[in-house]
Length: 187
Length: 402
Image (cartoon, rainbow over all chains, first blue to last red; front, side, top):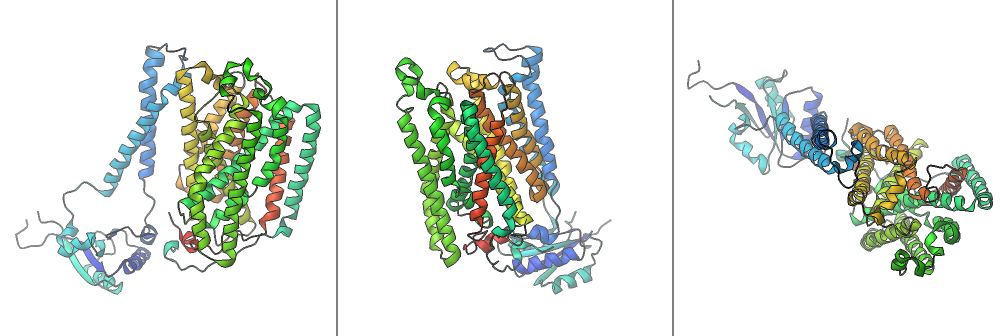
């Protein structure tokens, strides 16, 4: 049972870096030290940060492929089953078998795109853990500068190598100008 | 694992192709080309009509590749692209083959009237359809236009190559600006040239037929096949030890993406043309597909749809495939074979409406033009650096990541 005076558990440590360059090299070092649960936050995308952080290829593409495949097959079934099998349409001497497929291509194309786009957006949100109301990192006021001129790195407490003193010291060594301990949202 | 966009780059020294080391390749290409050319001359006396069509088929295949290469040069400058600086010299070199192509056009010009283009032999007064098109389909105009296309293509490809090569010596940025300026005027004129060349030499094989998608369709195949040739050429040069520190996996990825994009574009244009004609079912439009969707041509056409689009599309979807030189080369060869089939289906059914009739002259004409073009290409390859050594965007190109 928590009393109003106890802090919620620690979420992680956020450190502000003076520049994109320092942040980039800090990310490389954190990657090489084997940190797993951490992230960087910047006002703009930094080229090569994926490699510097050691991020793996996003799995979104595979979901999009199967989303698109589903779209193609659904469209082929929806258009093909009624007008080939159930109630063959006799139009302008067009064939009554699968060779009438050119007529279905526009709808196959559209549904492929539609379901691909849906899966792309949906799986992207799911992998990013969105939508959510708030993030503990916003409990530090200074973090608001991330959308202006602040470069931040966050190491989460659930990382195996995390300990409050050691990680803060490491971040200071990597060039952090300001370091803060952020807690989970109070319940 | 360091990231190229943050690494420091030294300007690589220009690299020159050593002709002496490619002596055997050149001998084989030139020898095979000459022998095949002789065989084609013999073929003229055996079966002139077959030779005319085989030659047109082979000529079109190489003409589209050169046109596509010129398109990539123009596009590079019009979009002020950075990534392609390291591979641009090679497309310039391929586009530099236009004077030789003009020479290879001579047999087509000579054989046009009796064998290739039936409209040349028909009196417009006796055929209403031809009469309607007679303002365009006049033998004199046909040759004049061919002269115009080649004049423009040779002029533009040479001008761009000259500027680019001069920049190697001086490093002057004014060449980059000049080329960019010319690219804006060059692109629309290029589009007009390729479109009307496609109309004159391919669509007019059957003067009763027309398609407004025709120029774009030929262009789609040109851009695609020339990108495949570029990938193969760069890989061949790298296999011989050139461009080792110049072209990276990142450039392969971009070339692979463009290969993929134009594979889709070709299918999009090809299908748009097919579906509109198929759906409307108007006799004056359907003649082209009617001939190619009957007899054994139908099977080849189905192979084309699957092989030219579905197989490379599914294969090139994955990033790793596009990044790996060895794998993307297999796709490039496959696409070139399919492009060959595409041109074959365009040209040959006019001569053999009864079905697929392969003839040794098809292969001989391909070997003659291909072998000689390869020989001319290699013999002038060593004159200049293998990449634009002093382009202002060279470092940017070396650093490119995607």
